[in-house]
Amino acid sequence: MSSLAVALSPERIQPCPLERVRRGKALLLIAPLLLFLVVTFLVPLGGMLKLAVDDREIATLLPRTLAALQGWDGKALPAPAAFAALAADLEQARQERTVGTIGRRLNYDLPGIRNVITSTARKPAPGEPVDWQAHLIGLDRQWADTATWAAIARARGPLTGLYLLTALDLTRDDSGNMVRVPEGQSNYLGIFARTLGIALSVTLICLLLAFPVAQLIASAPPRLAALVMLLVLLPFWTSVLVRTTAWVVILQGNGVVNRLLMTLGIISEPLHMLYNRAGVLIALSHVLLPYMILPLCSAMRAVPPSQIRAAASLGAGPVYAWRRVYLPQLLPGIAAGSLLVFILALGYYITPVLIGGPNDQLISYYIAFYTSGTINWGLAAALGMLLLVATLLLYRVYVGLVGAQRIGR
Image 1 (tube, rainbow, N blue to C red):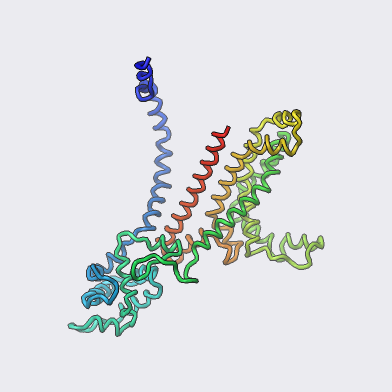
Image 2: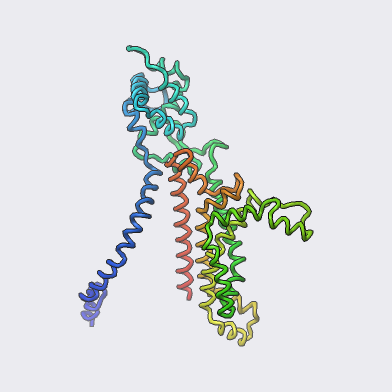
């Protein structure tokens, strides 16, 4: 009996040749899709993750200086050879027109050093021999500050944690220890908290608005349900930019909403619903509402109406039957719609930019700003990486909740 069990164990059972052929055909069918995902998603994603930690510019543009700073303890000014090496590197960078690149990269770590680099490189080098330490300090007193040289030493690469630390409102002091940035210099954690708060608010608003609409679609006659579903899907046929611009017209001081409220006598003066948090929540909820309605409607249609009637026949009241019989079966649809709306709201860009104020912008605005505005791709990639990690954690929580519910059943 034991030998039969061993022979029938999963490790011993081999797929038949026909099953291998079927699996091979299935892999061939999905191979184009996998290739498409790798080329259009995984490769750009890997490039973004690499930019968040890549740091090779200074090693290429200031090789002599970094070699001279090798072994420097950072407590006192480096040796005179480091000043001479820096002068040689800056002269070469001036000839190759890469001084701006050096200043831009070092300015990420030490604000204000870009002007020092630029002004030093513009000054003509004196004839040899010269005391380069005294010469550079004479050009700018910041060369006598160890923090300037520490910033250069930290940029030796090839990898750096500068961008990730900046995205977490952290930095390194002259000794290399991680410390909080000074008050007012950075507030990315506050921006992430604002993004999460707005995304959560939009999710709750969409859930409250989607529930009666989904219930109507699930319980209405087929013709009425099809009409309501058509109205729900209609916004997908219109550009997000057009819909957002329409909300600008509707929510402005003399827009439709304010005129209607003033005509009805509800308000005496126009409400401020544009370029603030209220406008962002209204417009984002309108844009993302269909993503909540569709999963909810699917979950409601899967619940047989006979279960509510059976609960009522057993003495359960309408509220009790709805809470104990109907609602638990909707939890997968609620979780799926909430997760979808929340993740989409996290990365939304157009609507908050057009309708929100300076204090209503999400983290996606700053990612776009550092990508195309200041060309700080490293910080943009770091912010994008943190947003990706937050999204993956939310997805993991969703999978855990769905798995726990299935086990409970």
